[in-house]
Figure (cartoon, rainbow over the protein chains, first blue to last red):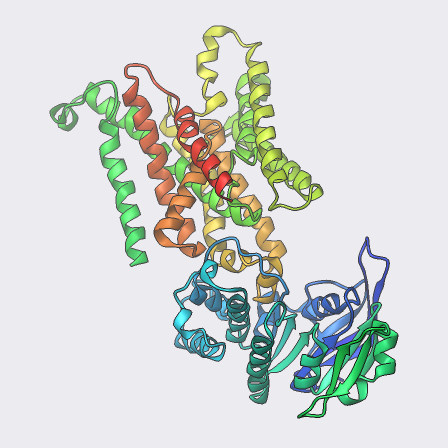
Length: 262
Length: 325
């Protein structure tokens, strides 16, 4: 039923004990295009959806399937070799170096002794080069700026070399140029075959870089499609309220969403 | 370079093993020690039966406490966690004390005795209680964890004091170690009893060491990188609890070694837990054996309990780390 390399969510229902809303997704296939953004207002269930897809949260009903097999039936190690997940927050306990953090991305590929193989080293080097932190390998996390830290986390996820990578707000708290640079890294990796699904807060970034957007509101998928079709003023106003305007991007023509005064 | 530092720490432990048995109130002569044939000389008895047992016990107990501390810090996401500040040492000591005190609770089966069993129960109870309190008070990384743990330590110490009130005074000296922790009156039987719990506990923690780095980046990150977070956390609690209970069952509540050693080790070899766990064992052991030797030597011919020394040395470090956070 499921083509290879696709993460399929089937009749998912998930509710938090405290929250008033329920995440309910009848069916959603992720990984069918290189880059896909999950968008929606705060508290619409974006992170929860991603965690269910990554197997971190077990839904009350329904299931997530990777390559036809239930995500819950994989061992974490086997799943992590194919499905990568990068959380929104990484509360570090110790002051690791950049290289140590990125090497942790190879955890799922290591054996019991976790000896570093040439393959591990190559993956770490490539990831560090991609995020332009080559010269920062020996820096400690405490010496990095917020943006550099984000890039280090991304490098760890890239070094993991999964088939599909689920990212929760990878561009959070980044400046415009840094966010665009990060999306370009993901675009380049996607061109080589990696499938990327990212929760994005920034609608314009999503529209500019992702051929497919999934719009969530109140725990339900309200729209799914390319940005030009999906980001219409009417639909966005229904979800985000009426204090916004949609204009075309001066160069790409993709829709841009701007805040507006009433 | 970092491998060398671990070899260096191993050398330090070896040095402790060779040199520390010489420290103590009675002066030992090399001639008396090397006398051959016939009965054991007094020097040989003191060296092998009294001093060497204490040094070996100190190396193993300190190592177990340090490993337990290093891993509990990751488990509870709190760099100030260790068996004493979590109340695990206190709970286990209370169990061991009760087992020793009332004859109906005391039985032994080879090196395994009811003191260890009740210590294990005490450690498990403390871990569950402190974990539950911290969870309700907003998460394991919060100060609530330490408040709960230290409160539990004090409560267990108070309970041991209260029960001691019913013990005849001449018997009390024997029980002093359950109040502060001590390695005096150690026998090779105690070493066997310690090994019985420290070996499996330590083996579990060493086997899990490679999972602690991803776990130190947060549970979600670790899960994304392929760590079975629930299983690793559960086995860590078991390994660290068993190791700490093993120590408390023979030596009472020795505090702060589990804090001092991992922090010093991280400065030496960096934060990589695959090195920190074994290196903590080596340094923690040397540290405790050295503290015990200091306690034997400083007040000779009297003795300072080693737990008092580690508290006086480790307490200020704890406060300094607390203030720096």
